[in-house]
Amino acid sequence: MSMLDRIGQKLLFSFDPETAHGMSIAALRCGLPVGARPVRDDRLNVSLRGLDFPNPLGMAAGYDKNAEVPDALLGLGFGFAEVGTVTPLPQAGNPKPRIFRLTQDDAVINRLGFNNEGHEAAEKRLAARKGRGGIVGVNIGANKDSADRVSDYELGVSRFAKYASYLTVNISSPNTPGLRTMQAREQLGELLVRVMAARAAASAKPPIFLKIAPDLVEAELEDIAAEVTEKQIDGVIVSNTTLARTGLRSAAVAGETGGLSGKPLFERSTIVLAKMRKLLGPERAIIGVGGVDSAEAALEKIRAGADLVQLYTGMIYAGPALPGRILAGMVNFADKEALKSIRDLRDSRLDEWASKPLQSTAAPRS
Image 1 (cartoon, rainbow, N blue to C red):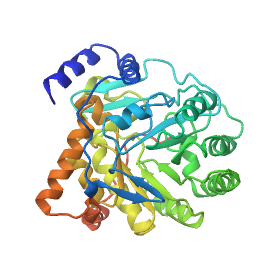
Image 2 (tube, helix red, strand yellow):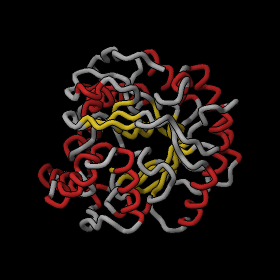
Image 3 (cartoon, rainbow, N blue to C red):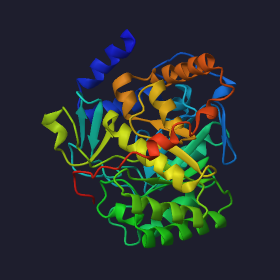
Image 4 (cartoon, one colour):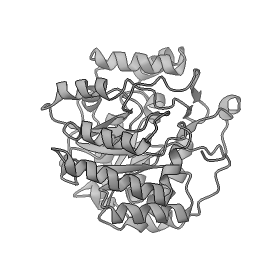
């Protein structure tokens, strides 16, 4: 980290995590921080599902929940930004405090519960930026008290199809009771049929991705892969936060309820990613998320089968210059290895990662 990043982190860490998050959104909205010019190199380009990504690094959903700063995020160097999760109706989420820093682990536990301003507010902002360019995905979810959660996803597709570069169906947050049960095959099949029908009826037809949890066993991954393939979903995002707490050093907050993100998630999410790549085959798109905080971590996701990678928690600890550092590291690696494209790395360690066992998550799943 640069001295400026360290000073900024110290300032933000003097506030509670949720306040600090709000301050960072406000800073981006005002044009700060001003980072180095984004790295541009044709070897980082990725063409996927009809979209041309300038580089494979994206901001994950969860940071810009209300589509307030997607263009500012792209300005930091990200090749794409994913806003949301957005639900049809505004909701406050779970009681505070609901975000906890695990500073000894470079990790975060959150139990936010899809707090957001709802479809209408996000749609107004996305409509206002239409035509600006840049790849902006929209992550859609269901309200906690919805009588028909599948209908909430249909509404999300119908409302955002004309604004989104791609849509992400998020059924893997651990912080909405019962949401993860939608990953079970029968429920998932119904959801995907209705989501794809909603896209077919929309005026625009962006790619659709399914975001899954890391706390799945082999049989569940097989069922999900079968449904994704049968229903012709464009790709999978692996993964959301975990309920596991293995090996954490930040004892004071490690027992807090919620999803864990950051460095401790890297290994399990990468194993799940590789196993999903094996199940889906080489053509289906996969975005790798979980523990990406360096160029090497991002490259390893690609080696394990990812087409694109995303981060969020890594930037909390490494600062807003992290995207630029990762991309510069990728370019340096391409130079060193004489790569024509960073995509040449994909699947180069697929077998190694896919052969690793999935250890049981210690915490109960919800």
